[in-house]
Amino acid sequence: MKTEKIFIKNRGNKKIAVLLNIVEDAKGLVFIMHGLGGFKEQKHIAAVARAFNENNFNVVRFDTTHTLGQSEGSYEDANITNYYEDLEDVINWADQQKWFVKPFALVGHSLGGFCVSYYAEKYPDNVSMLAPLGTVLAGRLTIEARDHKEVAEWRRTGYQVRPSSSKPGVIKKLKWNQYEADTVKYDLRPKLSVIKIPTLFVLGENDFLTENNRIYFDALSGKKEWHIVKGADHTFKRDHEIEELYQIVFRWIKCNL
Image (tube, rainbow, N blue to C red):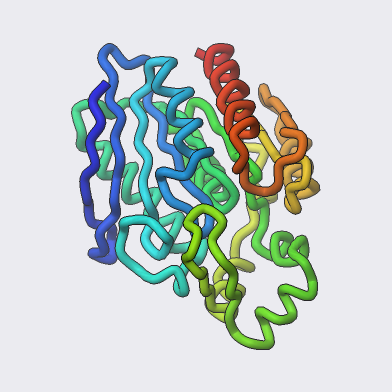
C-alpha cells in the first residue's frame, strides 16, 4: 500500500490536507470525512480507513478547512457550508486522478456524516455505499438535541468554548451567530427517499443524536444496517470502541462488495 499526504486548493484558494492510501488492484474507492472540529488521523477515522484498505479499497481522507487538522482556516468559522464544499472539492480533484472510479463509497462522522449524505442526495448515481456514523440529520434538530444550558451559554456569549478530546491541550472556540445561521439552512429529510444504496449506521450508546439517526434510518427503503456500540458517546474514543467500529465496518464492506 502506498501512503501519501498532499495539499490541494479548495474553491476559496485555501489549502486542504489530503491523505491517500492507495492499494494495488483496488476493488473500489472511498472518501472518509471527519466531523466538526475533527481531523483525518482521529482513531475512529483511521479505523474506518483500515477496514476499507483491508478490503482492497483506495482511501481518501482529508482535513476540511476551518478545523483542527492541517488545512487552512480557523475553527471559529466552521459551518456546514464550508465543510460540504470541501468534500465536493476533494471529490472533484480526485476525479482527475488515475485511480479515480465511480460510483465510490462515502463515510462521514457527525457533521461529516451529514456532508456525505447531502452529497449522496445531490449525486445519487456517484455513490455505491454510504456510512453516516452518528450523523447530523438537520441543523435545527442538532441544536435542539444539544444540552440546553450549553446552547443558552453559547448564544449569550457568542462562542462555544470547550477542550478538544482528540487533541489534549487544544481549546475549541466556535462562533454562535455564523454556526446557527448556516446550520439551520440544512435538512436531509426532504430528499432521503433518493438514497437507495447500502447504508450503515453506527452510533455510540450515549450519542445525543441517536433519535435523529433513527429518523434517518427509518426513512430509507434500501438495504440498511443499524449498530450501537455500548458505552460509547458521540465520538468513539476507547480502544474497544474503535475495534468494534472497525469490525462492523469491515463486515459491512465484505457483505456489499
